[in-house]
Length: 363
Length: 210
Image (cartoon, rainbow over the protein chains, first blue to last red):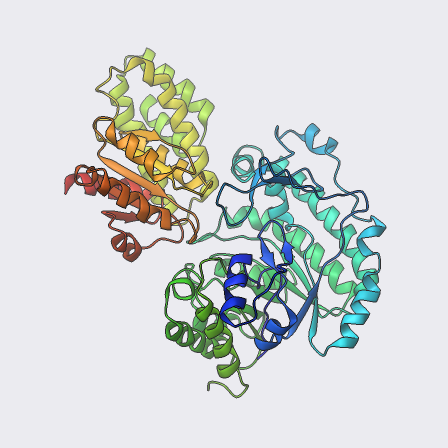
């Protein structure tokens, strides 16, 4: 059973990392932040080895003219799209705090300058990097998502509450925004996969569709506006690489799995087991033949942060029992491990994954 | 009749229509309290029920809330003090360190729609600010929202702050948000937990009857 640890949605918060390395007797001075937004770390190779991580991830670069600048007075920064991120005092990570599409009009949308998806700097040296990573390891190679997906990037640009209101009052606008975003993604992945398509095993996309109890917005609207665009993106990607398409899709999303399969998605992540209708045994039974589950390692709302190491081991055993038989499962924590997860629980998580994940597991 | 149309426009989330129809109803002699009791409150109850049945989602809740607010906006100037907020007084906020407020805002509107008087402290509300708000007269319920496992711990600290200030006995504490649960609410000493904005109203009423 493959194990994913240390990726864009399978790593850990820098505070959890520091405690963990201390606990393991491997204290660190350098804490390389892999993603500013989530404040997660690129874990030390020794730690990834210890946890038997089987996936190696890498990132495309930013556009040449983008320079990251943190405003320490407000603890905020702006990305290439004009989205503002701010961390509240004492906060663990950054929140979306400002959006370039403030008016919600077609004129504003048409006039907003998107970054150049084909900026050559994005792929500078990327093919060499991919080849090098492949030659150095027998692990699977994954290229990380550059931005949110069609829905996610739409609300990063517009604001979540505003986009929700647009869905009710101005559906044509929602569709026009989705179209601009998917066009960007199509250009971007066309450029990137020309370079690294032959080398990668997994292409990471991200588009949250679910909350705790069900869809974030109506499935009818998802099927009308987002599903066809997911399909166009998946078709493009599949035409340029044999890599599998990984979709990060949080929340209660069982209702969407048939649609995602139809859209050409190969892998579903993170398998948020505490959300409604996301029981792992049922998911595997119903969809295990048609899609790969990647995640589901341990409930991240109660067991992992608040349970004992023994609770964590039991939980891991149960999830592997549900999801691993027959293959089509990559073990990973359910999203990034947060600051308050005790180091002994993180160790228990990956030790149990290794122990219970030897193939031949379950019946 | 006019009142039925108001109800339907709220459920449909049509704020412009609600404003117009409520105005017309008032001009035709309907009383503000009647419009609230016969249209706005039942409409929001229906919206909540549809949300719980997964027929409505957050966008529909938002537009219905706006529609209800539009109706209330017409009626507020016409109401004498005692007409609004007779159900109870709620102080509500998203806890310290957490800036997420969409869910909390929905709870505010649902409570207002059910006749509660709501003081919204906003987001990133320190325990001391909750305490200060409760010190002012007549708070019945303290309601707290958190989106994340890493910020919900502020709820326990807020309950402790109420205890330390000698105010805990005088109020009911209601908590909610995605990472929460009935068990967590009990552990931190809350009186009630609600999984969403719609059941928050039901729970708030129950707490006041207890």
